[in-house]
Length: 101
Image 1 (tube, rainbow, N blue to C red):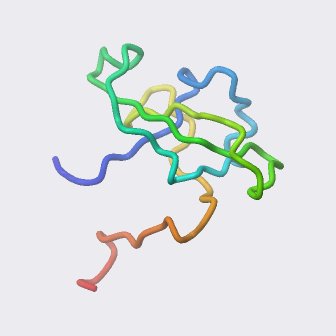
Image 2 (cartoon, helix red, strand yellow; image 1 turned 120 degrees about the vertical axis):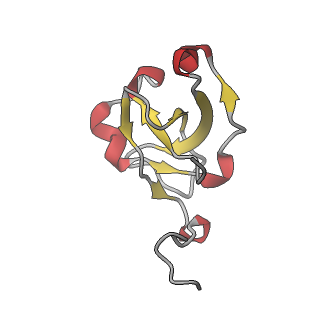
């Protein structure tokens, strides 16, 4: 199967993260690191990357205050897949929903 690689936020790889805060996180898409292998997801040949994020209530005018570890989907302990973006300029249209545009 080919297509975009989707990553999620696994609770297991981010134990300090408050589960109640997940919906309020804003990620900095420019901070995504290169995808790499990781022993914590090796049993399923998984991959991880990290991304910087702003926690709840943190001003986007300040530097991100968190570093999150993301794992490729599906990850059993994944708690979130979609996030707020610091800027809509980083968003792209869904090529699967476009009509040949």
